[in-house]
Image (cartoon, rainbow, N blue to C red; front, side, top):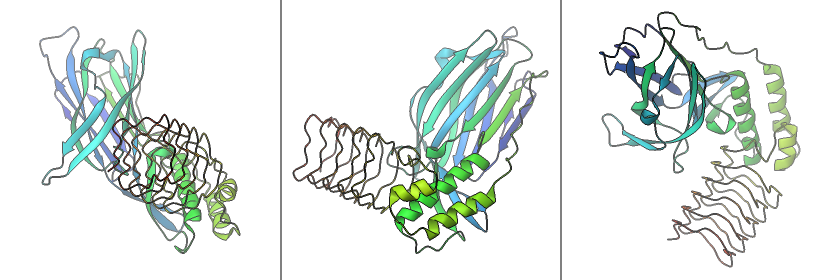
Length: 365
């Protein structure tokens, strides 16, 4: 629901392209009706995040988001610095239940000119959750001060590959495929969704005055190359190899950057050299990672519960907030790794080298 109580805010449009995945609403409340030269109002946000079904080719997929970037462009107005939404963890109890939804908020870039201000916040799911889920109400973005009658606020919620997580797929392939092929197909579909359905923004909104400079519209969905998508899926399904790197090459995926946030449950990456990779927030539950080289890699928030990393090379890797319950790190080289706030309960650390690791807040029992 949109509330407008200030007469200088007459035009507002919100385009929620995939409302089951993300619904964004705004609320504006005048805070000082006596201030006529530079009117002020409080701007707050409501987010509702769940899973979304979407038809692709002859089947459909279900996806949710792990986060994204909220970007505001303010013309002829500004959010007073002392009132801006601060970094931190936001929690909201769900209506009619005891479930608490959580979201991590980080500040992004701030660009200011004479008559324009661009602000952004990065929203992420907490490390103990796979995706954003639930209702977040009354998120205070800040107090907006109007400087001209032409004032307007243009907003976007933008997602990238690592922000989108596939939870299910139907009618696109038989489910007796290997886990390696499943993980590659997962990223193929996420990449297709990002490039063809979720860009340039998942949600747009425009809050304007009586004489807005721009009329913000959600860009139309681009022409899709469904034939190319089907060809790539068929190539992976029919590939004679199950080698992760060979499959990634067939799919034109970069194994070191394209699987951040991805679903790699029970995959076999035994002995691969993936040093200096980004697998942050990826799900490797139950995976075979024995003798893998992930040195100097970004593994922040990675899920490794039940995974086998025996003999793995993890020197200087970032495992902050990693979930490693029941994982095996036997004979693993963890020299200089960041294990701060990682969950290593019931993990096998037999003969693992933990020299110079950061163990602040790490759970071992």
